[in-house]
Length: 368
Image (cartoon, rainbow, N blue to C red; front, side):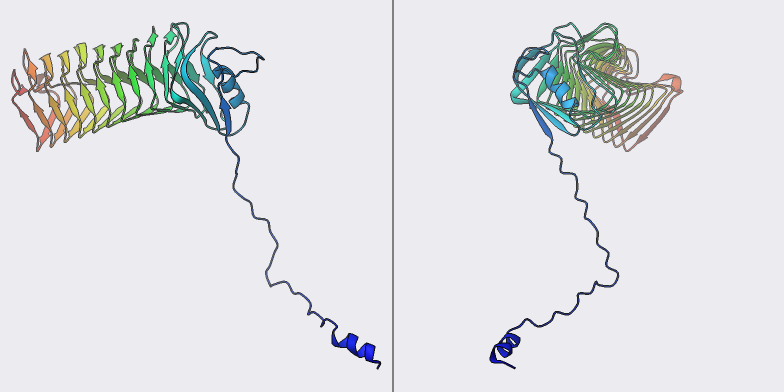
């Protein structure tokens, strides 16, 4: 062997053992979660136009968002947007669209010529820092908002809308949540402020100074829940504050200062009503200044009915229904002709008091 061959063999790489696949190993691909970035649209004109002018109106932004699959955000600078082309419509089941005021509250005014906005079934919008006003419904419900989808109303106001039909402020046939929002100064038939035939939740919100024939503030035949909310200063023929035909739950809420020309100044109910840690006060009507129960079931838990007035049943009028009070108080109410606290019609209704107080009412505490 030559010296060169010996050196080459000395520094040669050692042979590598063959690679073996671990038993049971199968190559596979990992699927990552969807990382689609929400589309962002900015409104750049106050005008209600659809034109190739290099600007983006609110109406155009809604159409552009609907044309893009997935979640969208529409930024609306603070100011007033007067509608001149009819109502706005959201029909987008491909993702959630958020319409929010930027730099303050953005006001959308239908100027009494049309409804403000309609949401189609399957749509899941959210409105934030908006005011919806000037809606007028001559042939349909919901002059302010007509909802068939799933809508969240956040830090927003629905005011000054009128309807010859139902739900001047809001007509809800889908699912709706109000958070820190106000419905006020609307005038309609059933449900001057709100007409609910779906599922609705109010959280830290206010329904005030609305007018309607049946349910001045709210008329609900669906499921209605109020948490830390207020219904005040509304008026109607029946159910000045709330008229309930469905399931009503109040938690830590107040119904006050409402009036009815006939029955149920604060609440009129023919369905299921439960009040927990809530107050019904300062309401007035001919029958049932605070609450009028028409064959339904009303349960008060740790709640107070006080300072209400009526001809009969200043605090509560129970007509053929079931009334259950648990750890609750009915006091300081007044009636001209019986039942300052509770009027249990002809004794035909069911009245049950558990650890509760009915006292200090003018016109008698309980009749008969």
